[in-house]
Length: 268
Image (cartoon, rainbow, N blue to C red; front, side):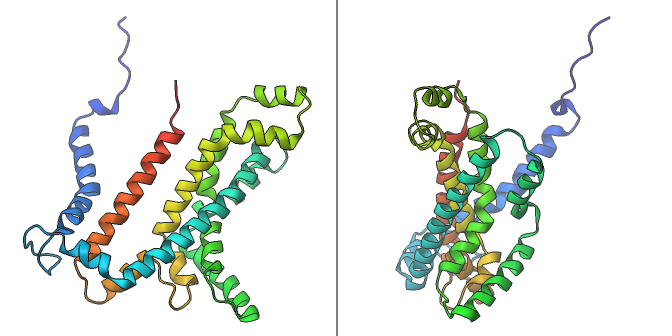
């Protein structure tokens, strides 16, 4: 008997059409946003020709500069803190034999991915509000810690994946040559793990940079990040400079995600 052909979803009737419609639905609005960021007119819905005026307006806007600076400080702090914690968590869950409750530990580390973000935001609000009342401190530290708590699983996953793909031979050889645990980690494990750490840090940075929900709940007056500033503009009179800012954010995100892909792809 002739062997039955392997099933392929691409051979189903209409599969190509459905795929094309999905891609159009996903990316057509983004393309429209990019095109209208070069609109010369003052309307976000009426095309008035090509121009860079709204990029210049965004560059000259002091509020945009301040919000961008706050976003970069918070995202950098959150990325550093969450990556450090994620690295320790990944080492603690992969560089040891399986233990009782390991699945529960995985669930707790990845909890922010499974729980609705609004729930995490409300929980963090309750904690930070109590601390603010007790200490009187209202600085950016709350935003950095809150973002780091949310970004830990985003940093943890690529770091853990990197560790699981690393051979223990070199670390065992270092131990056989009387290297201490710290020397083995610093000279062998850490250099091999660095691509995963950088990938996790970039993913955490992008996640923090784009966050709106947690920022809206945690921030104090005068601590608008770029996404919350844009949200505030949309609540008032939307100007085309929002399109320009969104396009620049998209470009930065694509650059970082491309770097993340290059660092995490498997090399032959």
